[in-house]
Image 1: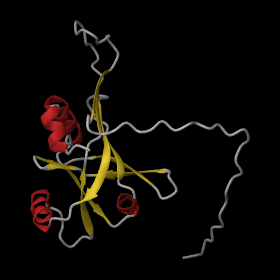
Image 2 (image 1 turned 180 degrees about the vertical axis):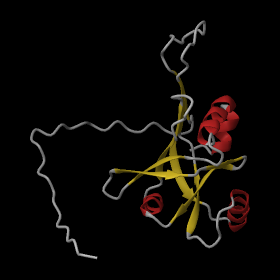
Image 3 (image 1 turned 60 degrees about the vertical axis):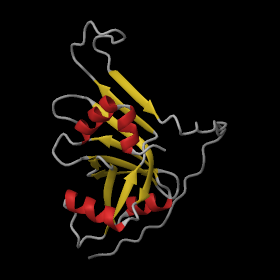
Image 4 (image 1 turned 45 degrees about the vertical axis):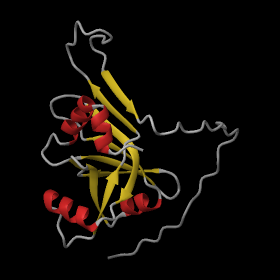
Length: 185
């Protein structure tokens, strides 16, 4: 698992392209996908913070924070641009930052409200992807006009995930239901 800084040192142009898309509206803005306790996905808007030290996010007490505390796997996708269909994606693991000095320094630089119940997480980078959808790309070797240009970086230190056998159920699983009680306000 590479830090953002290690990734950026290895692929500076790719890291800069991703940073530009995540910060296209000023402060960082993107969608964070986490893993729910039942294994399903959960998606939330977040404001990632990219510094020379790494890729971070201040996460308030919420289902997404509990997801990260329980299972640190994440995926972060840039918010759609108004000017293009370009997109950025980063995935890896999130870890709570325990160093109080580092937390204070990043909180001050990102203007994180001290009264809010947030926790700072650092996001490592296992995979990074940048997709550019240029409308009129011509003369670039390997790029077909009208087709997106995709650049992918995989952390060379991350071992590949073991291939799990895929089982296809022969019958449709029964639906699980739960009782929901509504009360008048």
